[in-house]
Image (spheres, rainbow, N blue to C red):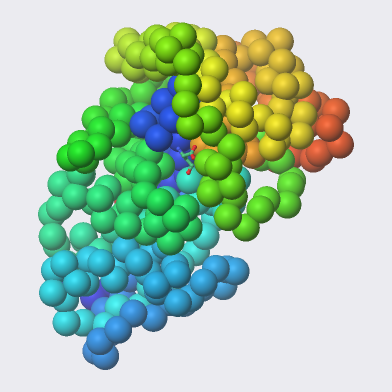
Length: 307
Ligand code: HSE
């Protein structure tokens, strides 16, 4: 009988421009690590060195485990050890990574053999702790890896293997992010959109899907164009226009906000000069007196067990 399991789950980028709340891509930039240990006394305890809530009700992983204990009528106590590596509040799917690793570890600890949709559904319950509302784009990517399309009512995740030569340059600005950043950045999105804008986004979103199906990084990158959410949010990212312009000039196929921001992501391929694109993005942020960390990354295979 297993009494302890450690799972890793990757950072992710949501939306990919026009796929707001629908598209997600797991990226190997950072991994959160969750260790679940069975305990004799019923209840959940959280152990962490990171600055996150340790009340299970307010903790992303805690909420996932609480729901799973209830659903599967588990009588053990569980200790959740959390090691956060995905920076929180920067549009890299930080809460989703903890939620995904927690659901994945619990499934292994009790040998539940849950299918992908169920794991994503449980992981989504943790997202509620931080975002206030459930959206599955980041958790689906973090659990399943690769590129995901989220269909809702009922939840149905479609996963596509990304092209092996797809690469991303992510610039994470050194900014003070608001406490409820995702909530704030969802508040600025228009409630109504024009038919023309919806047509533009739909054509780009469908082309992104075709790009993943055809393993074509250029089609993916050049379709990462969003005329609805990006224009509404970009004022929250100092230097965004310059970061984007610079990355495109340096050869990126497409550039957009990663998730709810403020990180900016450029899409490219392995044979491109990825350092040049990263440096160009850095200069863009510098023009707005903002430092940033740049990461060159590729798609991740999703949550896994650490052995
Ligand atoms: N789709 C979400 C958003 C991802 O853009 O608000 C952020 O968690």
